Amino acid sequence: MSTQFLSKLSQNYVKLLDGDIYSDVTIEVGEDPNVKIFRVHMNIMCCRSPYLRRILTSNKKDSDNVLSNIKLPNISAEIFQIILKYIYGGILSLEEQDTSNIIKIMKAADDLLLQEIVDYLQRYLIENKFEWMEQNFELIHQTSFQSNYLLELQQFCTDLMAKCPDRYFTSLNFTSLSEKSLTQLIKRDDLQMKEIEVWEYVLKWGLAQNKSLILDPNTWSDNDFKTMENTLQHCLPLIRFFNLSSKEFLQKVRPYKKLLNQQLYEDLLNSHLDPDNEPSDSISLPRIVKNDEIIDSEIVNLNIVSIISRWIDKVDNNKFAHIRELYLPYKFQLLLRGSRDGFTPKKFHTLCDGKSITVTFIKVKETEEILGGYNPIIWLSSSDLTYGKTKDSFIFSFKNKNNFKDPIISNVKNIDYALNYHVKYGPCFGSSDLITYNSNEDMDYDTDYCNECHYEKKIRDAETRFSIEDYEVYQIIKRRV
Image (cartoon, rainbow, N blue to C red):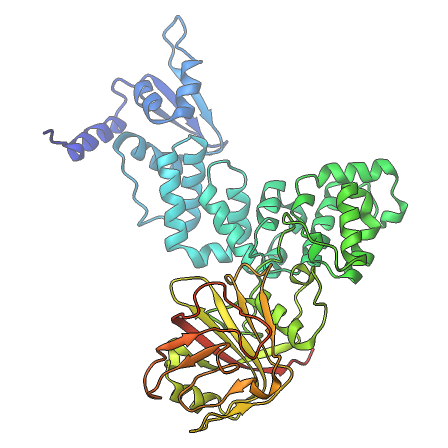
């Protein structure tokens, strides 16, 4: 067993900075008139900094034994003094440093390839200086993407831009983004932008990199298109062209068709002209955008809401519908959430009876599966087995909230048994097509299952019974657009 006495060792090494004893290298930092020279020790510099080791090993003492000299004009004397204390003693004190100085320390450490301190300071800034970095976003963004090693800060910046692109695009010059920063952003599923906006911003960025090109693509030569294609070669594959509406494709993409791979353009054209054409598995799904004004859900996202809304309005129910722009004509007003309000039949009827036009979402326990149904009339309570009559109700299932390529929809086929109104049932469709039940209306549901009966088909391939992890009931209201 060995014992480490690192504290004393650190103190002894830091004392070497107090005098010139045994020093054999000079480092000149800063720029005129604020230049300062430090006398340091080659062996320590070489052991601690890969950058200084590379410089020193190619800059040996000459025959007259003159000290090796290094110039670091981009690092101030104040910051280098802090870095030296870390190099010699493994000590870094930030208590008296303002955030702008911490950024300078991190940049200096990055230049000297001191990855340990670079990683530490990135985490420190993210955990302790979040608000400051939001307020000084342009500085943080520019600093992080000037380096290949500030990956956590790059991720921090990309996260913020993905969450609030409008805010951050206006806080910095968007067209000055590096290609790396731009591609990291537009590849994200959670970028909170419409796809047509992504395309327009990418075009704007490309034009800014080629100032000789004018805005109107109808005036471009083949060489102009080739120049623009080369500029956008890493961006174009990240645009989700299939998500655009037919109008957007016609007006915003078709004029730039020479930028696109010919096969891609033909596939896009076919997808708009032939809605029964089978989409390729390689087509990216719409981005996962959020909008609490539409729905505040713990179970589903706007992509599923869009699909449900299309089913309700019976629009665009073709094979490409799930990858088109979101269809959001309704606001979903939360009536009940099981994890908040309880899972009893009584609570369901208390909060939902008499409410018209509702959608139920059920998260199946121990899976990512989502079940549910649409009720175009109202919910009621009855001590006898009573059914609601409608021709427009349907039930559905999704494999999970982010997998909506192959949902199952099952329309009512026996309209006299569309809905079940018994007081001991929660939201129920048909006599057994989607059932939530407890024989004691004050107790949580203990009998939940799906069978094919009064709807066109089963919505579950698995066993009929399931347990509820959470469920939500919404009243849907037409939005004012």
